Length: 334
Ligand code: FES
Ligand SMILES: [Fe+2]
Image 1: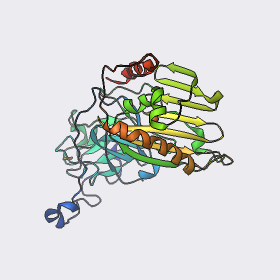
Image 2 (image 1 turned 90 degrees about the vertical axis):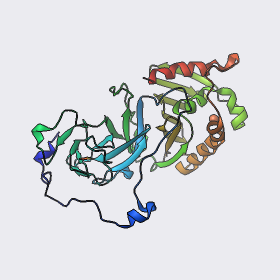
Image 3 (image 1 turned 30 degrees about the horizontal axis):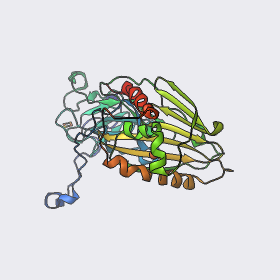
Image 4 (image 1 turned 45 degrees about the vertical axis):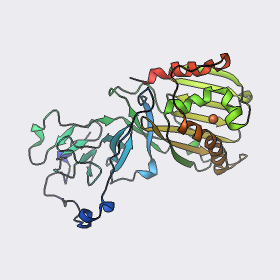
């Protein structure tokens, strides 16, 4: 990690400072930058600990920080000079400026637009207060930092309610970068639900008939190993792998590979990103497969968005898989 004070342009006076002067901001609130949001409570569980997509690689160009609202928090994501992504809490520990609104990238640091404090992208610690001295930076001068990786053409951040280290990895999905497979197609959409509720769908065999008008595909094999699950059906032709709450890889032999990430925006909204690819000589294009899966989920969405969460549900014997799922999900909550 390079120290920001060793890099050119880090001292006050180099480069140009000062936010843009736009008098219309005062008279026309619609021209103001507003990235702050609020949330309310609907489910009896918090945001789960895990890896979640915060941006596609293409959404995060070098040189410009991006404002995000996920995990019930305002965050900033940016690429350091070596292109590696970093995610920090958005509000400066000094006087609360939003680091994505005018913040400047220097090396692996993000410098606040308000008074120039520079934050290390990996640790969230202030490295430099340009008018005070690098050696005298107070130890409390830091913001929350999230472990971040770029994989499968996506930028992922690790969320943990207590700041704990990652306890699993983002899987590599080789098909997404394989020339024998098509250019991935991304579909993103917001739903008023939670990761656990969406995942419960896979363990609710009866709803297939009533919501999707089809019989549930019987599972030949179901492996549960800690945070990992694998369900195999259709004689090995359909494999669904799950990594934590909100990360899945679904492979349909000869048809498609599909990576699914469900990012909690707050405790009752999620942003779903589905990434599809198909073999070049496969039976369908990634757009066709995406349309198919999207038609399916469009049937679930009105249910999810309007239902409540019943903590002690009345179930029949065949439905105990729902309770197993709820028990499994507990490991992701602090
Ligand atoms: S508010 Fe960020 S440096 Fe003052
Ligand atoms: Fe469904």
